[in-house]
Length: 212
Image (tube, rainbow, N blue to C red; front, side, top):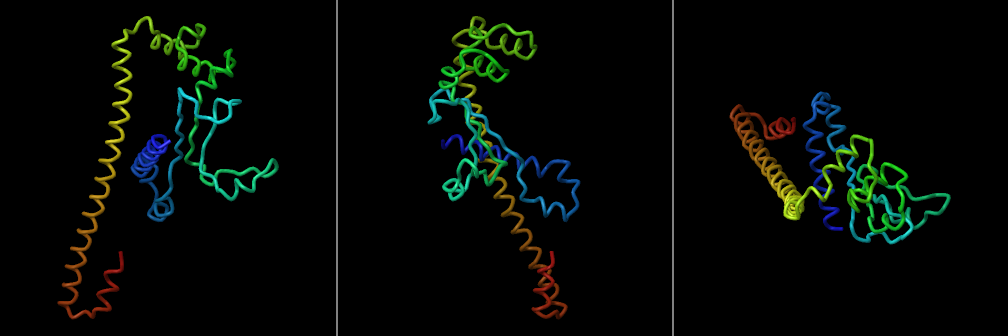
């Protein structure tokens, strides 16, 4: 659970960083930017869990979000509790439940999950070029155990690298804000000294510095 929330938080921060750098945001006028400054893009994390994670054994997929405890306590079949923040969601797939509940393939989702959880030998050949490409990439007979191990290690290294990148980015952002504050303080000091040298009152100096 900690890893799920940590990685989702990183993706949210990364999405916000990219949103503020986007052409869409930069083309806004100053007033619009202030309105949308704290706006977050939608973040959906999809987790394929090769272990039992859902309490119910009658489903293999669930969507988690942020709910109000009071709304949940007072919800019923007529008035269901809804997420209070819909932009951040987790789609959880319980693969052990999927294997028990889906013996046959009846949808594209079934095909993907069966392919990823049970391998290319457990799914039929497909004329779909996307599935055919995925089958070719995942055929165990063409991959040595050493290469599979290397791919597995690379996957975990990739997550670790992304976590490190997130930490570096957050530290850089904090340092940048600190430097900006120091720069602004130095500028305000020079302006105040100049105004005082002209005989401007302290009240007027304060008002002048409050204008940004």
